[in-house]
Image (cartoon, rainbow, N blue to C red):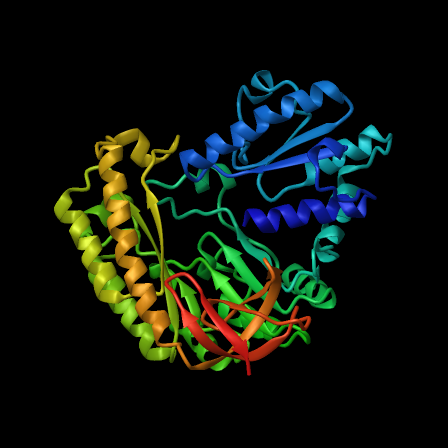
Length: 426
């Protein structure tokens, strides 16, 4: 989501006549797009912000914009007093305060209605950044902003606001704009992406939105994330199974494998219901890969409860497990009413236990690709090798002197490891 937000603000700046530069020292405008979903991310944002102070002192005319969850939809009280050298504060997914500041600094006063129309057009005429090989092959479209589910540990509803679906017309216009610029793969984004349209009765479901984007010429692959077990429907599974461009890869977080922990997290399902969903997905979509998220060290999590999570991961053999150590976030229910009582050392022990388990599972899954052929969409060249992904979102590297950017080609897998594979062009 933050990558997509950064594309939007960069595109908007280009449409005002700005050009990107690789060095902060050379910039007239610096946008620091921030995340606070974990404490480590927030600490990193403050560290980078502090490092910009000498630049601002040296070049007072430089504009510094802090954007994203560090500011939040309700603002960040006391932020300007703490960082007086920051010129503009922008909430997540909204470049408007920065654009208005720059226009007014140039003496271009615009009415609110004109501003909204202008920024709406900017959305539909998104300009993508270039990588070293050329245009981007894969890009993102946010379709649901904010979240209203409010898991007890999650700061997103407080920082990104209530759930709001973007209009299908704007989404389709953005997808067509990306296709015109050479994008081959689009990933639709939402904190709970399967809830798209539920706040607007006139909007299509996610499944029907996928069907509409599927018709756009030039788009070869479609993905979506992140799903929630409570809202994953058979209609969506049917779309994945029926539409050739929709890739058989699903991200549906478990977060824990113990019912008491899940209840404390306010996830809204049981361990058995999650297992049943994974089984159902695998029955409906042949060869599907599934990714999950796990939080270790949630308040009150006992060793026995952690072992239930370990068993869940061990039994289900997920393709990917994104692991995190619990850290209390301000305003969340868990930070207000629960004691962060699992020591950091124990969180790390549990984290590494799951990490080791998942490494073995991923290595086993990948080993089945050895000697097989699969279609790879090549995204970029990295350290002399072409990088691409399978339909199931496996990372594959290929050595070739050809320009493979944006091509979908058959590749034979010649080496596999837990995190990536190597192949040769067929």
